[in-house]
Length: 228
Image (cartoon, rainbow, N blue to C red; front, side, top):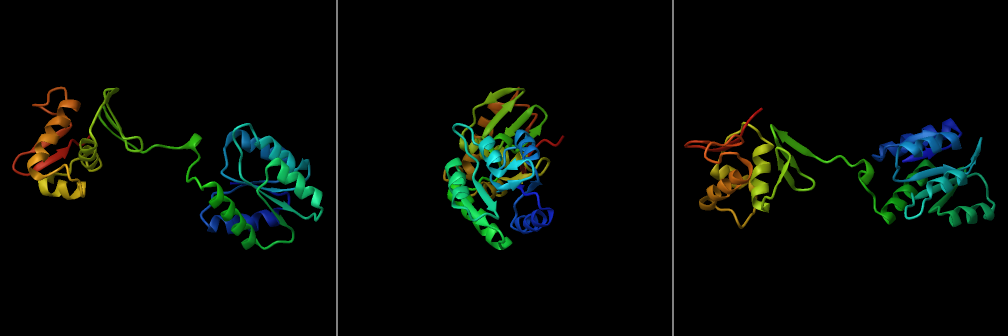
């Protein structure tokens, strides 16, 4: 979140309380600094003081409001003028808190706003996908995609599960029963069919399925993923 307030004491207290709630907080005290931060990052929520040295929180709110996209906003104000509240609400502010206020009230209102709009853990523009890479094999766990030497490999859901278990534990040998336990409650996989799924997986990933480089057989024990 981005907190804009030109009173350092207030900003520091609010930041402490908000970070205790698990929020990541950027702070600044001017419109210019706020606009610079908005140019680099996409906060999930804005907390804006109305009165700032080089303008007002309304200036930041206007700049943050683009067609088709709106950042949830809580306004902080020492003013009791109804006109200020109307202006802020017309510009898209979600709520107001009047000074003096309790930091706990600000936290509660921030949480309320985020619940209403749906609280994202990571903004889509900055989302970092979880990937595993072994040699030329790459697994994108978030999008359930697998590529080998840059070419997409179309795996079934069961094949993807098997590959994921092995790839997340390279070098560890899994007996058939152990591998089935790690796959969980999958009605498609039984000990007698596991070998067939492994063979199909190799056909899609290996240059020579009879001499695999990635999904290896440990004879008399089970299977493992090659270790780099």
